[in-house]
Image (cartoon, rainbow, N blue to C red; front, side, top):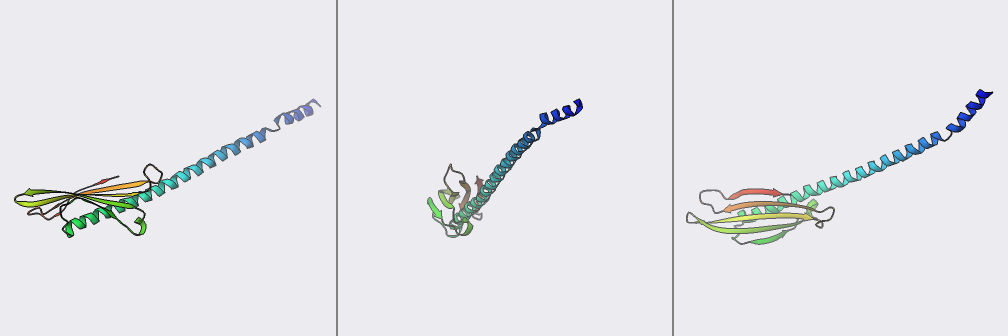
Length: 158
């Protein structure tokens, strides 16, 4: 009889142990789920910013090409100017400013104009999430005797 009483006593002591284990597992799994959702949201935001950065790159490149075209094809006079560029399609949300600075030199009795183009593409508000900016800069020499005019230096800034 003693033996049956001890088995009953042990069962009473062990009651509730599985409840504590189940609660612990629920808390751990809920924490892992919350962490996974946070990680997924951060990954999605990072991907969206990456796409915006690529579009800003293309918008700044378009501004630089447009400025180079104006200088090389249209025979732009040696003056400094700042021009906004309006883009369409996927790049329509970007503000693109093309600044042209020019310096004139005399070399070998010929006039040489050196244009420095700076194309800046931005979207959003600086300091806020989702703000993106890309800058292209190119230097063009026009009227160099004995050489073809064209882009002689180009740099990209992020």
